[in-house]
Amino acid sequence: EDKVVQSPLSLVVHEGDTVTLNCSYEVTNFRSLLWYKQEKKAPTFLFMLTSSGIEKKSGRLSSILDKKELFSILNITATQTGDSAVYLCAVEARAGGGADGLTFGKGTHLIIQP
Amino acid sequence: DAGVIQSPRHEVTEMGQEVTLRCKPISGHDYLFWYRQTMMRGLELLIYFNNNVPIDDSGMPEDRFSAKMPNASFSTLKIQPSEPRDSAVYFCASTLHGDTQYFGPGTRLTVL
Image (cartoon, rainbow over all chains, first blue to last red; front, side, top):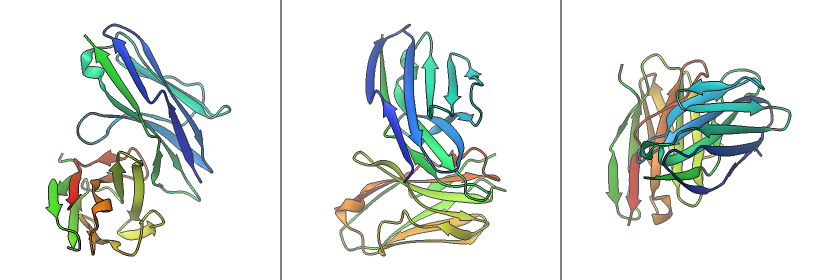
């Protein structure tokens, strides 16, 4: 059974701090790892990672995947109160081509204090 | 372009009643997914379709749950009869050729 474990489960930091969120996974026929941000509504897409060692970057957010050690990290620098959310990590497996459903971790609840 | 559309946004019903949740995927997307989110279990895949055909329904919790996709622009998730433990937020997501999955706003279901 595919498995995704995120840590920490919750994190409280001050505005301006840098945070690192962790995601480890076990999946058969790995296709991709995705990061989503969820505030009070639906998850919104941040990154999709398929190759090891290649950093994806968007503004103050960046993420990297290690397919040998089966983990990914999401970094947020110079955090702002608007970064407060649950960050979800998900993996997608593919058996024989096409898409597959995502297996999600429980998420990291990030709170940025002013 | 409109995103994934779900209705209703909120549903409150009594135990034993039938509940139907609706989803319209992003136009042109060929995959549609139904997920359920609870505090205890997080986000879980229930079922997904490719070109309107159900591919994997192993996440559907029991026979009370059923899903259909009669055409490329519409899907339903039905619970009959509903139970209090079905209370959750139900998300629909769609993707094109297995690229990024985009989520709808969700339906918050409360079964009393």
